[in-house]
Length: 323
Image (cartoon, rainbow, N blue to C red; front, side, top):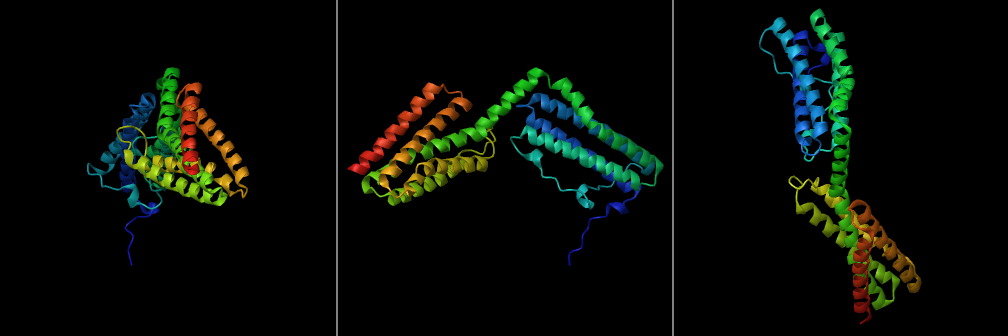
């Protein structure tokens, strides 16, 4: 039977509590530094706020270290959060690149709450008056970190900086989600037109056209998903996690093809063809709107490009199916 090497929090003495607190503050300090480093290029104002929060943790660590040295000497034993029961395991978000600014802010808030609760519990547990007094002070400081963050934000997050970061966030969202999704939707909506309508024109059988469209849509979705995921890892381009882009691209490709394939479940060939053409028109309109809204493409230009491509592929399918 595997024996756990973790120690119960209630069994820690004053020396161990101080050593653990120093370790926690050092970890939080480095996490803030990593967050600031990861956001500095895209979100410089938020990075400055996080650096300020990291400096606060440095001050706390120094106070804890000074008290420990006075009480127990220079040697500080290595006691980490994973050595003590009761701490929630942290996902290493700070290692992710590129970082999401909202995810970082939520993570930082959770860090502060966890640290505050640790100090409150440790203060109640400690029998040493000096240690208890310092832990109470730090618990109060952690409660005030929200106001500290607000003060730093008021200094660093000026209206111009907020506007710049909002524009950056919108650009990254377009780059990481909208662009691969749009590429998939365009490929699925346009490239599958030829096989679907070629099968419909050749057989005049709705079910056969549906099977061809289903196979083309799923095949295109899988192909486009892998192609997008393997194109680059996002570390240099800032395009985000490759597999997230791949899933978005693959799903939108499949959706684009399935849209005008589903009408061929209608048994009447003429009715199915009419509904499929209407769906194609809606798909092309949706692509035009997305390009205009998110990619800053003029509406008329986007419409002409999309419609021209769709018509050419549609005619190709009809001509091949009728030959």
